[in-house]
Length: 416
Ligand SMILES: Cc1cc2nc3c(=O)[nH]c(=O)nc-3n(C[C@H](O)[C@H](O)[C@H](O)COP(=O)(O)OP(=O)(O)OC[C@H]3O[C@@H](n4cnc5c(N)ncnc54)[C@H](O)[C@@H]3O)c2cc1C
Image 1: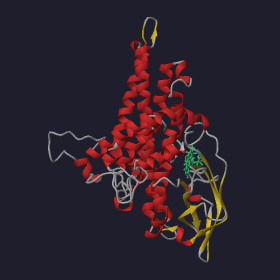
Image 2: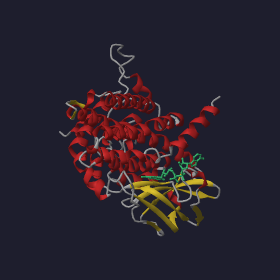
Image 3: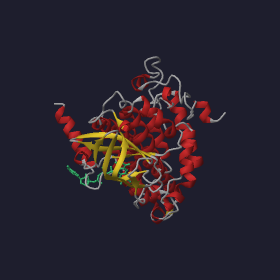
């Protein structure tokens, strides 16, 4: 029996990633109230979470690590490896079992993003765009007929999904978007474009936001919609194991039944999904920091200068110790917030705080690792230079640091 089968991980309909796994609220209590001698494990609150981590960690070491540098060089998504994630039952990790998902919580999603990003954050970003920006987002916004049409091909990995929110003229200022959708009989005519969209090239289906009158509405757009196209991939600094590009709508005909949740419902869907997206991006930064800590610590023991291992130098100790403290603080915050995010739990403050704190941690610790490695860190011999490039994205994508600062302040003032 494979590890996936042992966990019950499968993309087959009706199968489950877990049985009886604690819900978000229960997870915090796991083993704690029942048996005071059992310590709360914030990072693996249940046996299912621990098994999930072990499985993803093994998968990452065995299959993700070996291809990361090559796909970074090529600037391509490894689509066959991506489909392996479906075989492991990970595409619908947050989707209830009754609809073919794994029925797990935000902690489980964080575990997957955390572990994958220790080897290949770029590949992980393609997974995030598919499993969270499309599947999770779509699931909680869709009706039964829409689920019937779009869940199966995306859970099985046959179709790649993504989400279109950002526009050439409107990024942080997302509510100012200019893409429009006008109802004409049984169709909406969509006009405009979205940019920097992860999985644009490979994507078969996208959740797209457009203005219907003054309100923001959400639609599912797939490749069969006339007037829909995508640009060539946009070249980027990091996260090159996934691609991004433009979604282009030229009198694009979207069937009216592809409207998600009614006109004007798009803003709620968008905001709700941003929380888990920000948390997953935080977990990716944590994965980068973990890997860089491991590399720099080992290197400092092996590398000899002036007759002694470099870890004996106080300045090198500062990189290692400061990096460690930052990484551990990020770990505690990300997992703590993950216990308090879910379809029924609104926590913008927590998810913004997690990403505001953790995004720079990945970047800073990667920088520390490069400094400790010296010239070797700057070269492709070690993954540090790739992780350093990847880490920067997390300060921009899913909301810039400045947008988190604004949101946090707004929410704190509102709570007074
Ligand atoms: C690799 C990658 C993948 C991406 N994937 C997706 C995706 O799949 N789907 C999607 O929809 N988008 C995606 N994005 C887009 C991403 O979410 C946006 O880049 C991000 O939200 C910032 O928008 P912008 O680039 O337009 O920057 P802008 O909004 O133009 O911001 C530029 C600068 O101005 C600051 N700024 C803006 N407004 C304010 C303000 N009011 N106060 C203070 N400072 C402000 C910003 O913080 C930033 O520093 C991706 C981006 C990248 C780079």
